[in-house]
Image (cartoon, rainbow, N blue to C red; front, side, top):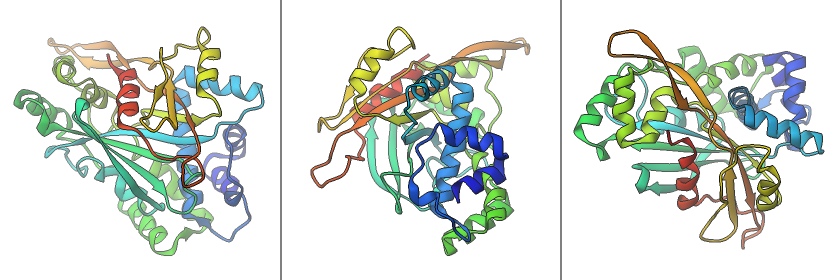
Length: 328
């Protein structure tokens, strides 16, 4: 059913190209009368991965390199950032802006991870039906109250006019998906682009002065000001991240080290963030093309957990180290 949904939403050629690069769990390919919440959740993650690969040439090069050697992407998780503050316009504050979409898709918060050095909190959303096979979402929120009053005032100016991308029609389909657990193919195909639209920037680009004021206190807040809640990174689950990272250095711009969790069971590294140009307004009102960090691609190895299966948890120190990829 997943192939049918992606083909209905994207067209057969684009859908085939996307699924060619992904390891697709067998339960999601079985024929069915309707699209389950798991199918819709995986399709959403696949489209968000496709968007990131379009924005991150290093991720696209990595994916093609792995395919050439017979490896499809095992999509472990995607990550995004939100703003927790009183001035987020029409958007719910913080992680609530995306939780309202994820819960109807079958996700629930598995654990919460304090990130005090970043003034943030991360939440791991895990799918209740196929937790090891449907990508997790690591949703972080930046707490404006922990920053200076001056930066809070700038943030209110930047994020205060945010619009809500979720239409009433899409919300109604989400409510039906939550109550019924599935949607007919045609309705799921209509819902999918609306869900993708939630993971984007929903405020105007900041002025150059406002961007620099945010950057002075928080690289992460400055990143959100230009990139919004687009996927910050997607992650391929691999057998040996240490060996793979070593083989990629010199071919791709990689992080110098591999982050290892306190348990020793979760190992992560990443490409460096792609630099992108964003049109910001200068002091004289002219548009200035300013180079800022965009998104990146991550690799992760998950070793077996004591209770069995791979260890699906995250690690706050690992996350903090990975977040440094987008420092300006």
